[in-house]
Length: 415
Image (cartoon, rainbow, N blue to C red; front, side, top):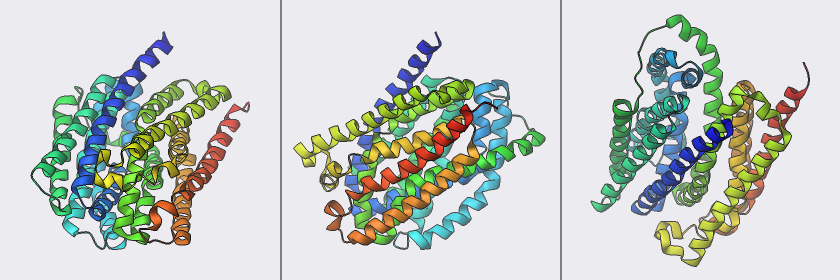
């Protein structure tokens, strides 16, 4: 009965992920082809920075909120109130960090465009995610899936309007992006938030912050290790190469959407049944499945584009030679995410944060070394550094697996 329920929940989420892949692909294609390659590189990197900063927002209180929604439904409103308070307290820190990033990573980007894109991520899409997380915690998977799909659809319609109206500048796109994400957040809270009783509990919040801060650090390091590479490429190689790299990584990222749905359900199961994380056969099977799905997904896309390079537009055609050279990257990349979720499900948030900080540092150093050795000219993008990214992500996977399975091995030992 439990297995049937898990399968049903996953099919609901995976079906939503499949639909989201289609919508996200349409969105990605419109934006990538509407903007110049350099502008897309700056937008993708600024959006990635906004995703990281959105994890600083609320100082990690989203983690206690999710746990409350999962196991203490009646207190969800109390924890949501705490989230809003933590969000307000964290915004000055977010602003200060963004101000420091602008001259360091984005000296060529218009300041207003940078501010609008960061705001869209922190106060737009992240708030939609909060409502989706509450719904997932309360096992309202259909509502959560519908919300994320609707949000992705709104952003796609915004991109379509931007393109149809003939706009092509990064400054105009930043305003469109902010408006679309703000509308997503509004719809999420008005139509998708479960009925909750908002109440204050200051003493509870102070106790929970001791757990929230390590969770925030882990979340920040998770997204830093996932997105830092874009900033390294932009700083070293400039907007043109950053655009090529961002497009290639965006195609790879699409392979992770169905896997993230599985990761979330698997992590929730581990939270209630720790034996799931201690089964060596189960974990090996999961790793193999993730690798096969990841490589197969990118392989299908690469084959289609090799057959018809301009199938997805002129900007995507520029990265077609890169994709066959990156076939192992999505497997290693998605498995690093899986290891992080495994540690979260086992409540090893401190180890998770330390591991992801190490992964972020190693990734930045290895990509810097790869670009430095290959050269940073655009002509080097397809032939010189691309194949070496497989080894970069293999090294990250090896470190991640060593740490995650050391924790599991210790958990198997009798107390």
